[in-house]
Amino acid sequence: MTLRLRFHGAAQTVTGSCFALETDRARILIDCGMFQGSKTERELNYRAFPFQPAALHAVVLTHAHIDHSGLLPKLVKDGFGGPIFATKATVDLCSVMLPDSGHIQEMEVEQLNRRNIRRGRAEVEPIYTAEDATACLTQFRPVAYHAWMQVADGIRVRFWNAGHLLGSASVEVEVTEQGRDQPTRLLFSGDLGPDSKLLQFDPDAPREVDYVVCESTYGDTDRLDASPERRRQLLCKEVQSALRSTGALLIPSFAVERTQELLVDLVGLMNDGKIPTLPIFIDSPLATRASAIFESHAGELEEGAALKQALNAPQVRFTESVEQSKAIDRIRSFYIVIAASGMCEAGRIRHHLKAWLWRDEATVLLVGYQAQGTLGRILQDGASRVRLMGEEIQVRARIRSLDLYSGHADGPELAAWVRERMPISHNVFLVHGEEDSLEGLSRRLAPVVREGQVVIPNLDSAFELTPAGARTIETEKPGRMAPAAAGRLDWHNELSSLLLDISDAVGKTADERARQVVIRRLRRALEER
Image 1 (cartoon, rainbow, N blue to C red):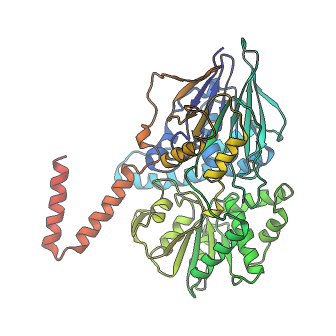
Image 2 (cartoon, helix red, strand yellow; image 1 turned 90 degrees about the vertical axis):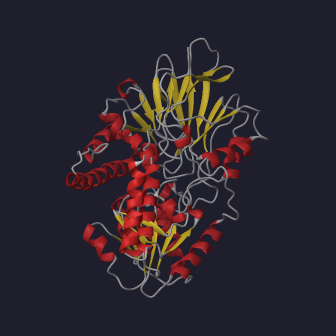
Image 3 (cartoon, rainbow, N blue to C red; image 1 turned 90 degrees about the horizontal axis):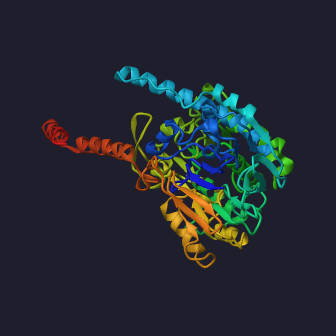
């Protein structure tokens, strides 16, 4: 019997987690996430899956984040009818996150189609709708931590706390095959939380497995002094530096867990008198619904009591309607707004950025990973101008980053997690990272593993998992994206930058005649292409 592992996402890029495990009797997925980042990567969400959804027997979901769960409604829409196994908290979070994702896609496609009609272009359809997302929720099956669950013929799984998000799990998989005396044991890390995570207990997982698939998001990063005290101290400093009589502190944040963590620390600093008591607007309907789920699971969280206190603090205001969101920008005294999305690619944060980026009394505080090609990454890298919602905007606001709220372990913590899983009989596959992170974690693991034991797969690459180790399977079709294109700026980013440069060049010319010269040169270049 042949056991195969295919990497259909999060291979040399951070998003789109999706791994297929196949035997002659069963096929399952570990995660089915949405690609984020550059438009080239996001375009993969619209393509057909590189497998037949109807042929799958089950999906095992590590956690609710959209880059791990976000294509489940499409999978069901395209024919998958099996169960989706996840922890109870993950099921609860997906019940609000997936319909929200469908709603966002519907709204964005509606806006795009209005522009396409004006431009004479064909209309497009969303990847899936809120109705599609709601329909897929009926296939979820809650599973407890540490309990073995048979998910397909010859395949059983067990969940372990990953310390990353409410309900997050590393997944131990045991495959029983004809002709082998012992089952093959695999461990998928999922996303691993750092030791200093505010609401989550430290990750846990079994030892002595055959294969490990490990995330590498911050594989090349060392966070110095990542203690809770240091995190609050740095947040306090950022708020104090942002204070202006008529300014605002904008925090693009993932609606699920990052927002709740920030609330705990901000309210705590205000209660301790470290910063003034200021209005905090949670401008995200998803964050509002997710917060209610977190409150219902507070007993499972490390700082559950502090979270409940923060969620009910009088200065914390949850906005629901678009009108309430727009009203925030009319406030004339200083305030803090936390809004999705964390990478500034969608949601209400883009409207707040449009209102404030060009004003020097504003501060934008980035508190999470910013994938290559996203607006958040472009701002983090120091852009002086950006294109936002079809307009060119000068960046005068202060752009700051605070990495200590990351939900991901850093390089030393990832290496320690792998070391604690030893001995590992065969291979360690590194996924969910960009090039520098993957190579950084590979170097860290060199003293721990045997030479050649670490494998960095490409998108859609496949391996046969043999008793002697992993063997590459030559596939007939090339991967959906070249390895050189993964986790990098794409032509959409280059075009946006070029348009800004053209506008700048024309604006700096001395007179009408000089502007005509610049435009003629550009036209000549286009004609010579």
